[in-house]
Length: 253
Image 1 (cartoon, helix red, strand yellow):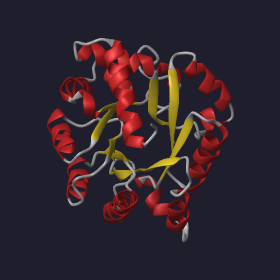
Image 2 (tube, one colour; image 1 turned 45 degrees about the horizontal axis):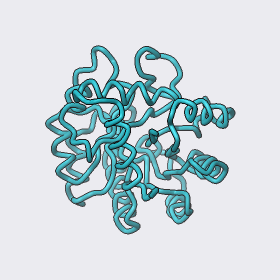
Image 3 (cartoon, helix red, strand yellow; image 1 turned 180 degrees about the horizontal axis):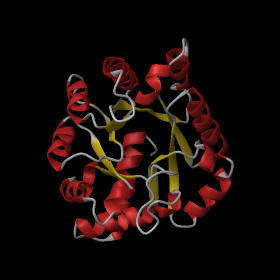
């Protein structure tokens, strides 16, 4: 059994055929899905999917690239959505200076607000970080310890250790399977089994040998197998620990 801790079944590429993609993945041993919202429409879709399927849960939040487009009432709406029984996490939120270099302070303010919410509700937070490692760490450090996930972590192993010290889990996705992806492979080797999660981030970042194609949760076993090889262990060990970690973190037990 595997749990896809970060998948966008709410994305247009997958949304119209959700049932197909859930069945395709369950046939490959992926039994539970956390659908990640990141703006008002995608939060609503995530909850709708979670309401429809027993083995699907949702996370709702405000992605850093959406911050510049936020409307009055957005925060109040997603705060209310956090009380839904199938919503298990806050986010995807964080900092992204690749797609939005113009609004770092607004991003940091909204990120901090969502960390505060996650702590007040005792919910994990799903963290997006791109070209903003130091600022992401500094914002999180102010709230340490933090219960949450560095989603599809792409930073260095040195910073991975620092995020782990804040109490966070490290989640790895398709890039850990890429032949030239040095950083995620190094990180996979050093993350303790009790702090490791796996994800697809589908429909993005399909693992090898599907790199560049549309991703879906049925490819999650490829990620688990790649990590097992990097950690000199077996697939069953990675499946067992990542599933236990996800169940505990998201309160699925």
